[in-house]
Length: 106
Image 1 (cartoon, one colour):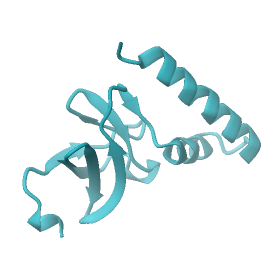
Image 2 (cartoon, one colour):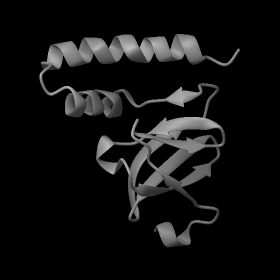
Image 3 (cartoon, one colour):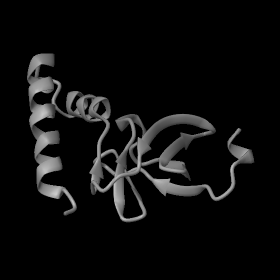
């Protein structure tokens, strides 16, 4: 399916599990860190593919950093294996709220 798409951008996944697209950051699963993915925007949705497989979608909005909460939690679990699931949930929720508050485009 990916071969039929026009205007697909090849992007690198950085250590924070984010790609950079049109000045903003969007998350993918931490398992893609260091790899290349392809991004295609259709209307107001960003579709992110890895090896022709759709791995993430994000609505395009005014936020500078756009983490899918599940991507962020999984990344935290991978980097802090000593934390239990309840702590990860709490930590993720707090940090994502801070991101939204600090980085909101006004």
